[in-house]
Amino acid sequence: MNKFSNTSRYIYAILSALPIGIFLMFFGIKGVSITESKLHKSTGYVKVMSTKGISLVIKLNNSTINFNTAIPEHVELIKENIRIGDKITIYRINGKHELNYIEKLVKDGEVLIEFKKASLVPLISLFLGLIISIAAIVYLIQNPSDFFGGDKNKMEDFVDPWRKNKL
Image 1 (tube, rainbow, N blue to C red):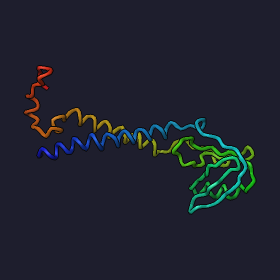
Image 2: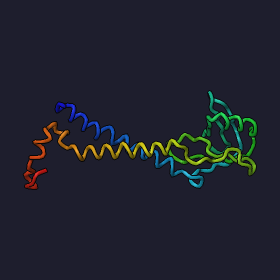
Image 3: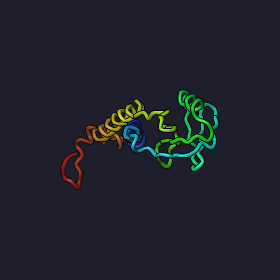
Image 4: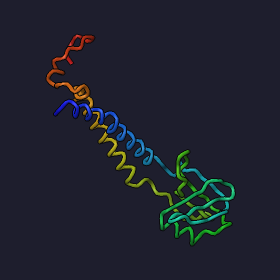
């Protein structure tokens, strides 16, 4: 292989593979760690209930948040059981950048939408992130000469002037 392809492969591992692996691990861990006790609870009377495309949006009288769901079974269940003026409790993932999806819905003590623990998506994300990160780190450690585009045989004979020994 030529020097350019070795260097570009090394830079790809640093700037692309490693960040993607870390990103996937982060969201995998975040998704797996969500439990019902970490959900934010909002209780109030239904002020507005509207549909936008396939999703259903609910506004409560004491909140400025638009709570929504796009799961067809949830949309049908809400349309059948909830009317404007009903007192409900909505549980959602609390966070600055969350989309305010309805994770759990309770009306008059009856749970209409049950909270479901993380699906396979965060687990797969965590698994892929681990594989990609480990592969990138192993490549970076085993092939430092690719960054400089040098010959691996010459790199083995290189003596570091600061350490006075071979690399």
